[in-house]
Length: 410
Image 1 (tube, rainbow, N blue to C red):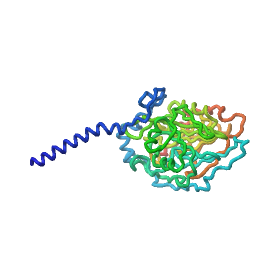
Image 2: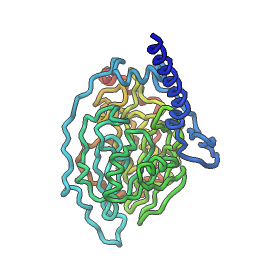
Image 3: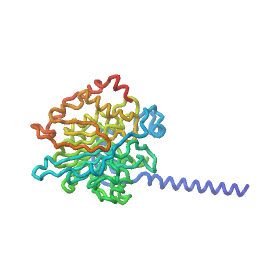
Image 4: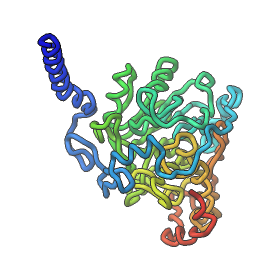
């Protein structure tokens, strides 16, 4: 009995020691300091924050973070079913050859092609530049093989990607910053990676170099200028490192019209849209429409715009073409698989697309894996950068959409 008591006693000592050690080590491991710098209107010296109303602090729903995580893991919130998989026709290497180069005397007609790979990953091609946004090829969006599983295969096989020149990396959530994919691309192509402050520390841990910029900073890269611009979101890789790294959208100056990539964002006061608009005109805008519903009937969340607000962002940008992203790949929220594009169609029918006849603008979805040519910005008397956003009464659009068909969309 004495021997058993001694063993139990030493066991308790070791358990206590391990727990004390973990209490010291684990928080430091989880709460990493990705960035050190001067305070600003969105950095308090320790963490970044949204300078407008910060409505991203708590997860949507009535039962707090623990309830949110349980509902996400268990699917116990009455969410509509998603398909286990959806058909995808991946682009072939032939379809991904560089667009035809036109004479240098007419750069305004430089071709552009975009292929949606899935979620926030897209390949944008011009004759001299292959740009990749938030590349994720993993089967799951989460750490250690956990997290939502992909229901749509990537629209381009990783081995079929052309050489990548530039990667735009918006923030550090697992469905946007996938170290496995980034490591493979870095080893193969050594692309220039532009991200926002702090995310470069995460990449360096995997041996990957990156250019990290603050909002309103820019980098000149081989004929293109990349601007890191404000959006409305948050960042974290672990439970305790919230907002240690910055989130952002991007604009890229390109011949024939610029590129806008929203990253992952809510709307808040919308001031960030006006900041981006000043860097147009935009030939193509990549704007998220999914992961907006965390309880029945919800049309947006603090961190994610839904289809109505996405259309509003597109309209206020004055973009020539818009492609809807961030839907139908990983299940991150409550809405059904096809609800985002159906709500987008309903919002457009209620006048939310503004006045496309003024400059031919259009915003919609495209199939994963199907390359789409984006025409150059047309030469019209009032080009998109000076066309005032349409005087749509956005308060009236949800009322217009309040129909039995829309209410039936879960």
